[in-house]
Structures are given as structure tokens and as C-alpha cells.
Length: 320
View 1 (cartoon, rainbow, N blue to C red):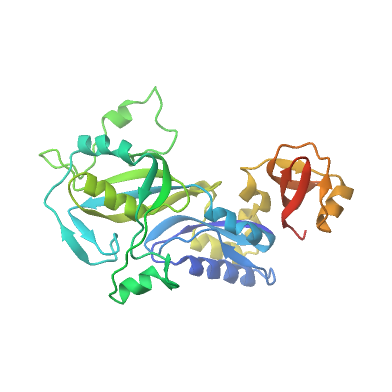
View 2: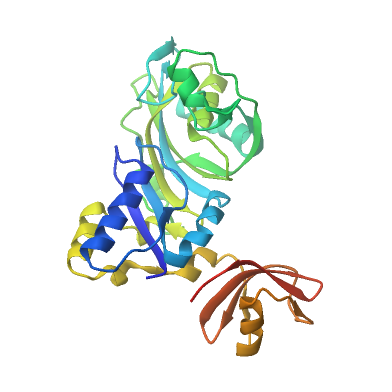
């Protein structure tokens, strides 16, 4: 049991509660005591892909923090809250509402490398304390802007899945109009899809888009549809997790340890080379491109390694 269980996290559940649910399923199924950790926090008000690492895969959970993410999110215009989502209290109001054309015109300004100020209600630390703790205590929290990258940002069309828009079916998009479009052509809310780099705050992105449109707004729906290599197609519900635990069938949905490394090349080793790496030795004269590699021997994961100038050094070793 070394690998990944991908949860489709429901509304209201914290990431640590997701970890606890997997631990409970492992105990129920009699799998023994295993290390379990999550690969990137999701707020309780967010749903979607939550990678849970089991056993030796926990050594790779940190890599998920550095991976790109894809989110669907809804911006409701006219009200800004202190938390920038449904959980907070109103701090600003505007009667201005954008049109679909206004929104389409402004999105390119938020695509590519951008600067954004994280929400005051975030887990970032200020003088050793969490920003959200200071904000809840009534203190003014001013966070520095950070550089992030928005790889893609577009309007999401309900009912359509990625890949379903084809040259043979363009009318599906042309005929679609959001229910929130008023008779005067403006919208009360819009759902967007964003492919973002690590460190991006969707709540901040929504705030800034609304401000660029001459109004204010907050996030009313946030769903992570992809985290690194893991997508919703891999994910299971809590009910399914519980069912698999009781049926001692968690292996059915356990993705292999290497699933978290499918973005880096594999490096095949001989048994002797694998033995040296497991002893912490450096391999010399290995013909491989510089950079990270996933070292395997006889299809067994050995280590995450760094190759430089034909020398191979262990970054994270696996006890398998």
C-alpha cells in the first residue's frame, strides 16, 4: 500500500479530515498502520481533487505543493467579503455589473505572469503567526504581493467537459448563454476555469478580476479539477472510500507511487546500481539528461534522483 488515493473532497471537509478518512478506511480494511499525508491543502469551502499519499508516497507529497493546479470557480459580482468567499462578511458593495463582452475583454490581462496580493484570510505567516489568525483577531493584515503564473483563464461552459468542444460541434458553445445573463445583457456571476502555478490564490484572482471590471466580487464556488498529474477522473467520494475500506478493496483505487512522478522521466538501473543508491552512494558515468529522474530497478521504485554531469544523487529514497 504505497501510492495515492485521490479524493473528490466534499464541501465543508478540511484537508486534514480527508487524511483522517483515508486512515480510517485503512484501519477498517485491516491494512495496518501506514503513513498518510495530503498533497496540497483545499479550503473547507472548496471541493474537488485532493491527493492523499500513503506509505512511501508521502515522501512525494511535498512535490504536489509545487505542481500546477486547475480550478473551476464562480465570481459573484456586487459584493466583496473580508475572506473573498462565501464565509466572510460584506466589506464593499457595488451596483456595477459587467457584460460577457466586458469579462472576455479583461481576462487576457490576468493570463501569463502576474502579481497578486494573497488574501488576508490565508495560511501565510506574518511575524510567525498565521495571517487568518491575525485577521480573525481584528488586526489589519497587509501581505506582500507575489509573482504567480496563470497559464490559461477562460469562461467555463456548464455541461461541457474538456475535449467535448470540436469543430463538428461548435454550436454547443455558440448557443450557450449563462442563466445569470439579465435582459440588459449584464451578468450577476460568471464561472471561469483557471490553470495556475503554485502559490496562486483563486480568491485573489476573483477579487482582482472584479476590480478590473469596475465592480467588486467574491468566490461562491471553487472546485479543483486537477492537481499535478491527478484529475477528477481519478477521484473517489468519501462514500466510495468507506465502501472500499469495508470491502478490503482499497487497492482497486490505489494509484502507484510513480503516478505522482509522471511529469519526470524514468531512469532504469541495474540491481547493483540500485543497491549503491540505496546505500546513499553517488553513481558516476550514467548516460542521462541533467535534471530530476525517477530511478527504478526491475520495475521497483528506487529513488527520486538528480542527474548532473552524468552523476546521479538521491533526492528521496524509497524503502520498497
